[in-house]
Length: 490
Image (cartoon, rainbow, N blue to C red; front, side, top):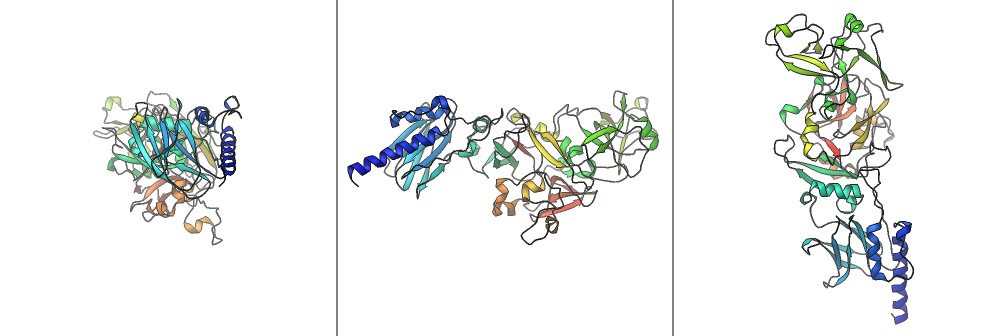
């Protein structure tokens, strides 16, 4: 190559690098034509990354330099990143700046390059190799395991919008919190920028985590008859929103609707009583408007499921002097009922208007709750309906569509509907996470044990969808006991 050809190659590479960077830089921080190449790094801290916690999107960067390749590397604030060639010669050094984020290196040929990260004290944080085998844009992930970052650091990268350039789907972090039922359980990344933030209904949370293995604590395995009991038999009326599975994932003070059991015509007319003695009316659910309306004036129907605004809580045993008919309940095979008389040694329950204590799954993650982002989740309303409702969640459970990517109406490659694969879940409960798009990961999701989804079964009102122990979609009566795999977003 002649000197003039080499000069033109370098000149064109510089021009294209400037053009690519200016495409992702705000107007007030654009690179000018007369700037030297070694000043380009000063602009990188101004890349608009957004904020996953405050409504920002995850950033997407794709910079290809003609005749060269772009290597993108992301790290936390004030980290110096250096790139070396196969001979160990440092080609370029850049700093992530006060906000952290993505830096871009330009390399002119194929081969193995080494990226090294050091902190402000000059201590090496990690090193990682990346192989360039053609002109294009490459992402060099960190050479440090996700588990070696703190939750605070993970939150910084997630809300900064650059987490997906640091880690990969399937990377895991062990939750360590002495006393928590989730202590020493590993949570893995199943998606980046997948879930919609509740704060504005548009922006995306940076990272979605799922418990890698089902929760196996025997005290909290899920038996849905405790959650979805109806007025005369076990049902899925009200769906996930009205389930105790969701109650265990909600924080104290949450407003909830629960199914009421043991309802009679007299109780419908008079209402139950809250723990403080005030009236607790019964409610009917309208699928067409997604609203609950007071049902006190309705004609009683034994085939109808009624709801209360609140939840049942155990009081343990009480003295006869404290017994008030219509205020205290007992739990039988068909749910909570009003006892006709006080009985010694019996466990009694009362109704509270809001959740009076943190749900066990919510409180289990209290140590990192400051980083967990409220997101929107959609699911069917149960009772064989395909109508949907949207709720705000911090700790939640996956829907069938989010795991398998299909629903009852999906047309499969065979030409048959999703129901032929036992996908009796409603359409619109979510989209498949990147983690489950990998067939190898999909084959491991059951791990020999069945676990519940948040998707009610649409073909019968007494069944619920789960992931069977062979890794396929299945459903069972709500009185069966299976495991759960809680999720959250950061």
